[in-house]
Amino acid sequence: MTPTTLFYIFIAILIINFIIDKVLDFLNAKHFNDPIPKELNDVYEKDEYEKSQAYKKVNAKFSTITGFFSISVTLAFFFLDGFQFIDEIARNYSENSILITLIFFGIIVLGSDLINTPFAYYKTFVIEERFGFNKTTKKLFILDKIKGLLMTAIIGGGILALITWFYAFAGSNFWLYAWILVAVFSLFMNMFYSKLIVPLFNKQSPLEDGELKSAIEEYATKVGFTLDNIFVIDGSKRSTKANAYFSGFGKQKRITLYDTLINDLETEEIVAVLAHEVGHYKRKHIVFNLISSILLTGFTLWLLSLFVSLPIFSEALGVSKTSFHIGLIGFGILYSPISEITGLFMNLMSRKFEYQADNYAKDTYKSNALISSLKKISKNSLSNLTPHKAYVFMHYSHPTLLQRVQNLMK
Image (cartoon, rainbow, N blue to C red; front, side, top):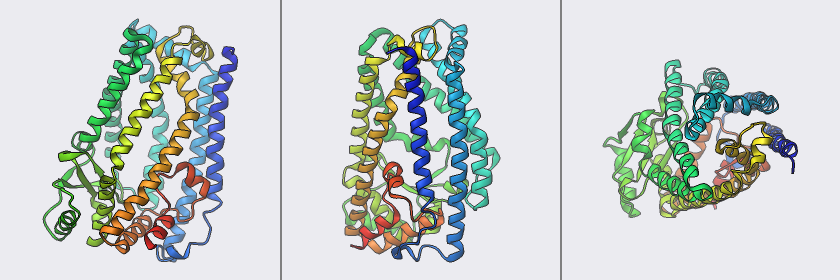
């Protein structure tokens, strides 16, 4: 295979991925006006449904515009030897391979963020604002951007620097060291993410004594679930959309409820949502996801070790010197079809796990309370009630609202 052939394989992969995404978007949009299933007739009033239709259509149009812009910039970058240009800048600042890698990816990440920021701003302050979701101030938007970039630089840059160092001294065996590093980091973050990262962006406070806390504690005692950490997060400072999540293991496990969830739902409905989250823990879904992620990372790093040092990657991307960071770029593009397949499998398992967690909540609490909570959450976020099956298969990590309601009604 020649470098030119490989270059056009890269381009073909990028274009095919884009076309598949746009075809799925088109199919999904064709179902926006489908009749609402009878099980979901009580989700929206007439004016609310019209609002949800408008929200879906505006977002679909925005996604199309940003998608075409993104693929155009990406292809221009490839054809204009953008990687060679950035590689030369990095090498002008240092001869150290680790610093060159950090500068190279730092420029790409920063440049990408600068390009995408106007779109993120429009999405937040025009679209989300128009439909009553946005609570983010411009100051908070900027602070979030700065914090996000700093975290990427410190955490992402630190891991990248270590992996580059492993490659420098261990050669093709670097993947073993990198795998151990990523596995330990994943476990650490799963345990302490809520304690270390979330407070940088949101305020968390223990759930106050009262009816809700008593109901939660009563349920936890009933199912034999030790829960000392129930926190409320101030999600309302950014959006009106509601959520809840479970994190950690052992003594570090905690349930986090968005304040918007507490404001939107009744006590029984909130306990039903919590019962669903407990179901994930009881059914070992968190452990499965963590182990699967670590194994998949190991497989990916092993594959990377076989290809990353091939000179043809640098030659195909127009870079004169073979290097680890250019190998990462080339491998990342070639691996993307495999990543799509593994992503489909993980989404399939995730949807299965959601059914299991719903069933756990149904068996140990009240299915009607969970149904009403799911409907309210969907209504308040103007969710799409009639997504296309192909779009769901490719993109959804959760079953549709209709599928979950039908399952809970069995």
